[in-house]
Length: 337
Image (tube, rainbow, N blue to C red; front, side, top):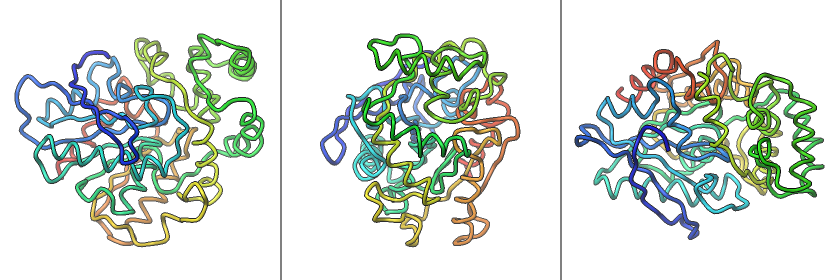
């Protein structure tokens, strides 16, 4: 971990799976309530803690918030497991929110959620499983996943070829390929990705999108962050990709067994949603967030908010060297509305 110190609080998800929370150690007591940060797939909470001049944790800390980070079952801090979004939505996020409220002795919490942390947290919200969460800032994708055409091609034609070979993919294979299948995938990545990124960064783009790179614009990252990110990615199960593939085909979140459409019933939440998206995102198109904003705005006009950024992509919303000027002030303003 860099820069900040955290207390680690283990918790059990509803199905017994071991997860944990990180609580920021502060020099003085928080004067505002808890904010829970929820990471995406195959990373960990430290993804919010890059070596930029001022990251989101700095921003929230200086504003007086009690900062919490959830390592749910997709985290590299947890034991490797074959998860899907339903499992996280039913078991992980509700348990995490309850634990934060219990320890912080508060009835409510706010949340900043990213990528598959956002999709799974969104399922928790619309099912009424996290009524304690009153403000939700979502980045990149939430209820309506829309991907570039090249990513759809990967899902439809490459994923079926990958599934019989391995249960997991790991961007770290770009630096260290431990066996034949890892070396085979690394060779494929090197043949198809010539961008000026690290070997791990190229592998990330191969797995998670269709860009060069897919999850960030290189000019938005400082050199330290570009190197630091190599250690922040790990295993992601094929079971997740099989689930999100069904959601992408439907154009909205559906259950892993394809029986439930999470956008059909009225959402069982009174949370205010604030949607963020980078227009250069080559993992999930920015129209994903626009669709979700329009969905909630139709039910409660002028209550929710939408922000688009022309020069940002996916993760650089949080990792960008200028995010402290371009992004975080708006997030803070929305948290304090």
